[in-house]
Image 1 (cartoon, one colour):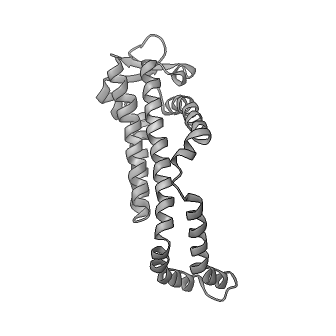
Image 2: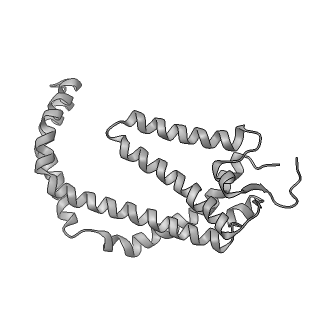
Image 3: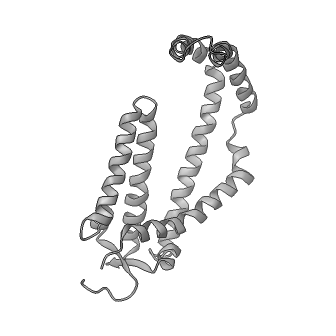
Length: 215
């Protein structure tokens, strides 16, 4: 009997929450200061001042109902190129900080999670709490392929691709995200074998603890 979607999600949540808490705590205590670019606070202040300089007038006019929403959007679009040019230096510093932060959380999470699942050979705390385990020929290489390369790699790719497309084509970004979620839901709860792509590729599967009965 294969394990359904709820237990898999609950198991994964039990596993990742302590990791996120750990890397967030390290970020707050030590890493944030190391990743912050020189002149970041000044750049934020300058960016806000430039924004106020360019947009304060039309935002006030819109709030006072002196212009309509369509007129506000039209004027904002006319202002945008000049604003982006004026704020390019401060924005670049702010963007660098965001990129560094995203890279820190991404690399840290993958590294800690990979060490965690490999050290326990797939018998993670979340799976033990939910009374499930990996079945099949379980080796550290298969665990790495299943839980790191395909599980984490798959969702990182989907999320980063959706985020990259969001500002240029938010509809396509949402379509990609929902298709990816739908594929996971189908493979884990609708089809009779409840085997995700990572199960098939790694030659393993999730089952309840104990004897693996063939029904």
